[in-house]
Image 1: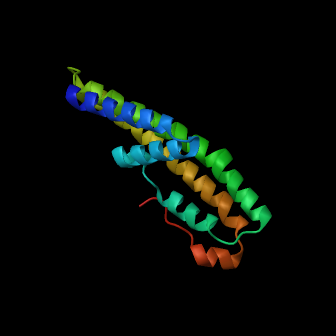
Image 2: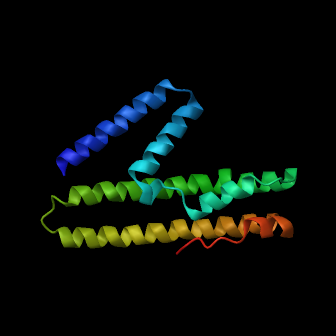
Image 3: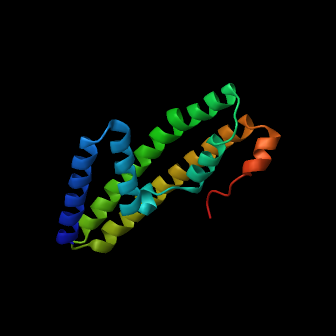
Length: 151
């Protein structure tokens, strides 16, 4: 487990060094792609992310674009980022727990925390969907459909 942690830390620091040498946008994109591939269950694209990409690609009126952009950038992205970081911290604690004598007790607590964070993240996605959906016209709604977020 210790070797796994060292490799993970080396990968993170290498990606951070490369991203730091790039422009801000390209560096952020590299970090996001790294995290999504290294930890798809935490940072990977959700069904809401894919649906929002489709919505943003529609021809939207200015007020629609402003409302949708606000829901994504001012509400969804910051809270999603907080939940992702908390889930990553739990994953790190779980890896540390492999050294713990009472592994079952620690894993049970971590599992409960993970379930709570995932529920909060799912509730956030539902809230964003319910904010964005009514902003769309009936024709736009028919085009993108109402997504099933949690299967």
